[in-house]
Length: 432
Image: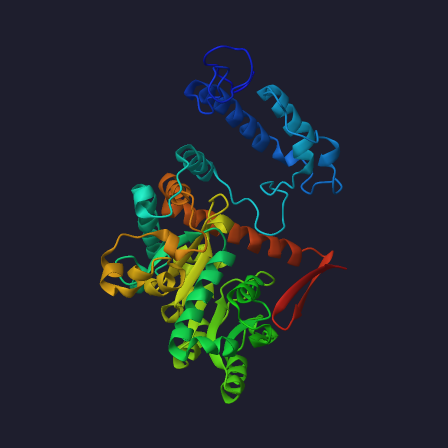
């Protein structure tokens, strides 16, 4: 039997007080044996991953036909479990880490990230505040400061100033947290009854997570301005178009509250004009958020850092280490210039909120920087990626990807079977 260790007599299952067999879920030697076998299984999977069809071929409901309709009464063996994984689970897996996978953001895992996940699972802490595991909070503060310096973010985003960084699950959570802070800052200024007047500005290339955040935050749907991106600017949003909508809203008595700029849009990798958007936000006391979820990793390379010019005007900045930084999902990095706005929106301690001195001198409780209370030890895997690869190797890794993209463009351009059509600064490849 697997993962079963008896204590006392063997007659009957473990129950209340009278003997029987007791389950010991964590046994070091069982873990050693089973863990080695699981690592071998995973290593074999990665070694043969190219042999699998990337997209699962199963039909909806396939697994219900293969598995029992109730949980097993008695423990099964690890061999039997591995057989079911091979025969029933893997056929229903879309292989995101396959080198043949070209959708979304593939191949974000690494040995270092995997090891970090293992260690996080082993500690299994719930780090909602400092005392629940001081190392979890303090490592996160340090690693986010490291990363901010790698990106050359303004010093206001560091923990040594009024701001700081925090790891969210996804960019969707990050933008929601930023929007809630922006909303509440505006409501404190204009009054709680002004919620229906708050307006958010995005382009039609902005990720849909912003609109979802608006729904959750109570921003009226008719107050979300979706501005058509300018194809003559490589599908970046035009600042003039933002200003026009904003002027109309002000004339109507509405309150502009939030602008989201993007560095690397999902559909075309467009980069919005951050300096201009930042100036608009500053002139109207709006919150300026930058979503660099996909392309932000490239900005650790000095030759691509200019894409973040204008970040000094932002109130918050987000990028996903789990998209292009060899860090297993989930690991979304959010920095804010003034952490007090997050705490005022998300803390559950009213006495703490009243006392500014207490906030300034207190240890960090990251539960007050996010939507849920509970949180994982995510900083371990990012720390291990940085430690085991180093910044120079990570920069080379990103440069190699960009070189491959340029090489691909060259191959298509020089192949007579393809033609390149330039359509308003966008390049389209097609077969002749």
